[in-house]
Amino acid sequence: MTIERLSDSTVRFSSVSFDARLVLMDSAQVFHWQETDGGFAGVAGGHAARLIPGENGFLLEGCEPGDEAFWTRYFDLERDYAALRTAAAGCPVALEALDRLPGLRVLRQPPWEALVAFIISANNNVGRIRRIVRGLIDRLGENGAFPAPVALAGAGEEELRALGCGYRAPFLIKSARMVADGFDLDAIAALGYDEAHARLLTLPGVGDKVADCVQLFGMGQGEAFPVDVWIERAMRRWVSPEAKDKAAIRRAARDLFGEDAGLIQQSLFHCVRMGLIGLDRPD
DNA sequence: AACCAGGGTGAGC
DNA sequence: GCTCACCATGGT
Image 1 (cartoon, protein in one colour):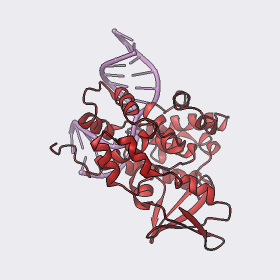
Image 2 (cartoon, rainbow, N blue to C red):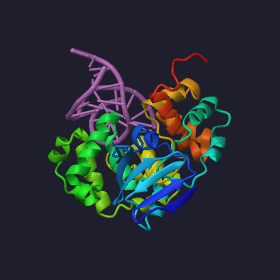
Image 3 (cartoon, rainbow, N blue to C red):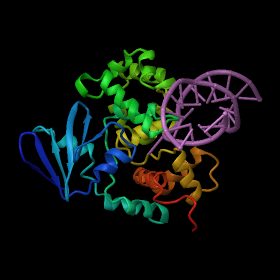
Image 4 (cartoon, helix red, strand yellow):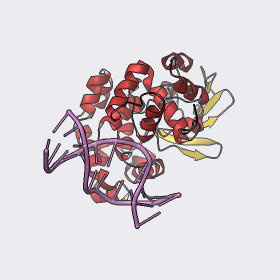
């Protein structure tokens, strides 16, 4: 991967595999990027940028001098994804899922942003999650930025319900209050997987699945393996048909795939949800 | 009109 | 520890 600065606001990332539509729009690990003409616009941690896909990488507009490191980390551009393929050795469906999505990457979002999005995701669908997160940014964010913890903590329950949050509104407000009052997500991100998971579970609206999503998409903890309805179907179908419940699937996956379980989860999730690998196809 | 969606919580065993 | 009803909302 190489980085060239083309102007005081535009940088070219090249020699890197990155399917922007897949990662930013279709993979459901982030919900607030928007397609513009020929590119994708988004915000993260107070930075705003527009990404234009190219043949061998992409251009990033709005990338001020000094922002290269932030976005390199956000897009996870320095990881050798080809090497992660070894984690799936011995599991044919996992290998197939990885090979079908060569430009997929697992983002490293600010943990707060992943926390908000995935509290909203509970028993919800991707289209609605996207609309709700967009509404939060438009109504509560400072000029287009992702809303800060204090902004959500200070929002009224009725205001959040009006944006479509439903019964998750009080969860969101309470968790935001804890973060605003010093519950340190960055410190948790530095802990090991098990300890980080246990601490995230103390936040209202956060159970095993949401915690795993925050750890995977917002903390760079690749051993997290979120078990949603699609992954449950896939794992029962091909990997662990005997699993008693979602917790058993989660354990089985981490035992099988280890530290890079998360990329396999993300690949399998997308392939099954999009019908690229049919749950009902014959063996 | 039921059922589903990147589930979590609290009550009752 | 485990199971289960319930929780808003919009789409099919």
